[in-house]
Image 1: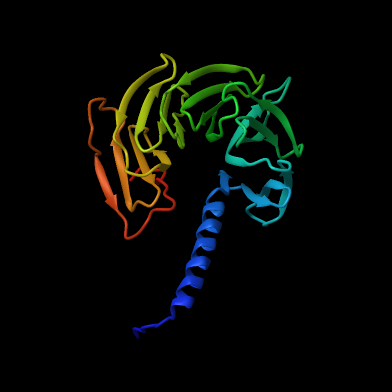
Image 2: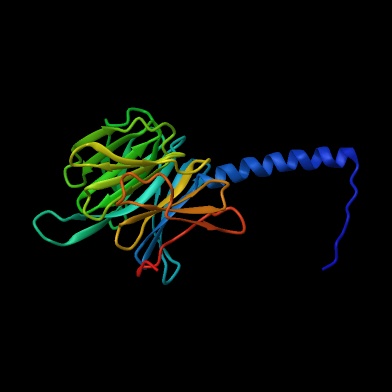
Length: 264
């Protein structure tokens, strides 16, 4: 490898600094874009546009765009999650995409109908929705002020609302049975949704958590944070533990993570 030393004039440094500032701003904007897979068939991608944020549904096998939804001028989609809703008078289900909006609403979008079929509002006022999740017939949303809401996807009714008091909340994870939820900012909290009570809290990370995952059997939580190269594994069954089960050290900042289906 050839090592090069580059000498720049002060004016060049100032210009580079301005460019770096613009790049940083662009990076921050890009970080607001989000996407989610529905199994191995569809991809929901949110991108910023001149007329506001747009959601595109893409067939992952062909690359063909199936549908597109525009949030409208000035509207921002903060997060997305795939879910399903039973059709009226039958057991068949239709795909839905839950969209967490910057203005506190949650929109349920149907790719098949290319339309928003329900708007969930009232739980978050105008606080930005930081994360959404769909489990069974339930839609869960968490706003930046730490308010956790559970909705009925069929009726759009607010089933319950929990004020976690977690400041700058950024991540939400719901168990497969819909009975437990993990919420995170810098710290991570585990909640019993039936009792509306906090089960446990972990110190988490020094930066905001951007990813939360269950282990395959949901006995452990895996977390990653912004500008952090450490992935933490937490015991979700030991409610008196304060230290992680394991810390995985990456070579650089962790941008994305996943857990194998077998849990190994």
